[in-house]
Length: 106
Image (cartoon, rainbow, N blue to C red):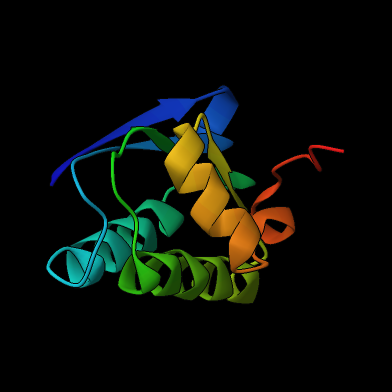
């Protein structure tokens, strides 16, 4: 798993975390730690870019939920963007897609 972070907007309004690689049991703690680190500089939003994540399992879903919980406690919104089709399908099947700002496909 490769992690990178960018700040966008004025005064760190939006922080984008770019993930590359599988989001699973092996990477869960690193991803949660990165989201929590991003929260220290995000004023309004944290966006997790999933475009380079080919695989997401239940541990990966849990990592995103843990990150979202931490964000909510700080008053920061967390969303995901550009998931691959299979990753988006996992988020939809588990019922968490709306929590991360993914539109309803209907």
